[in-house]
Length: 457
Image 1 (cartoon, rainbow, N blue to C red):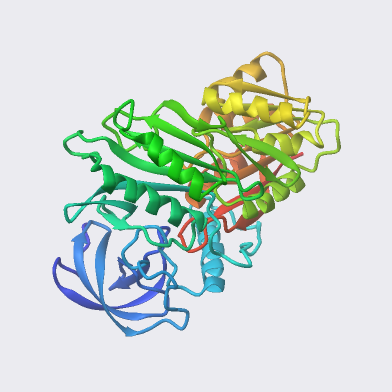
Image 2 (tube, rainbow, N blue to C red):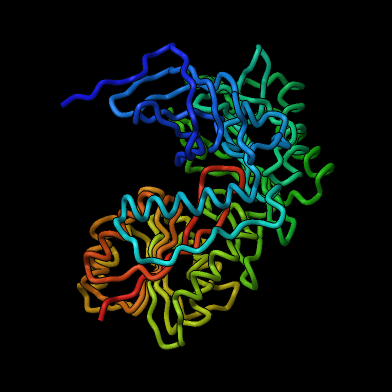
């Protein structure tokens, strides 16, 4: 029976906000019908204008706050209400951590159907600002002028960057130098709709421990006019810049980086450390953006792996070998699998420079490599998975269930897909023991988790 929908488009309603959605939007109900309102916080009474009505929910626009939440603060960033980056900066940070813990609990219970599991409080940062070691600035036209910044909420309209409080402070200086260079030489800017114009993005990577900086200019072409002048100014004003690339992206796509990179200044890689392990980072490397919290996350993964020195460990979706090299310090052997050839090249080099010899890396789909290893008679005592947001492929989970490792350590960046996969593993003979959420992305709706899963005897 089709239910009556109690709201209509373009009408305003008073709503009490009860919680937050996975994207940081406020969640309330009218006659049991769910309303999502961006910018609203739990325990607020608001007026919202309905902008989009679906069969099971509606989207509302925050018109006014009738009674504010006790956890509402004035965001320290002056463009937080425009930029799409920090969805919950308006919430007290300790309350953000509570929200993320509850988000994990709700997903595990509602989607995973798992109740008897320890879910720890989310580990936050002492100072939750300036934590990102990678920035991606779209370059576009706003009001007839070139602009570098961030996309506004749910759009590709650029909010000009001035001083992003979650980025490394050096990015403000880099972006201002690049903006002045674009203006001086009147360089053409890429138009997404027409697929014309030259400059698309500015990408920066910073080694938090080493201080080394990489600058990447993404262009719809194989050269940029007067690039030598930009290189001279950047390296003179910011001597920590040791690597500058031109990344060529001629595709009609929303993917930021193309596959071809031209080194136009300095070193091929920058270096950084997580704990005592050194990593070389290239333009296309996947490297966690918050090195402080990443160390906490990986140490917890290593704790849950509970290695004694005689285990074979599989590290699925290994990237440039970050978790693999942590595990290899205590395991007999680690096998890392990653689909990107460039990442595996970096992983092998990272193993070499750290003199870690008990790790092998394979290029390919995890859901193909690990089943093949199992078919060939190889086994893992411990399996670590760190999949993308979509979660693990079913073929991989089936192989883990058949292989019956003693422990599985699941590192997740999306609670809903984590919960789905944990439910599948529990049905396959495993028990979820405990979950530790870690706040890698303060002021956003994202939360990472590391999970200990053991095999039923």
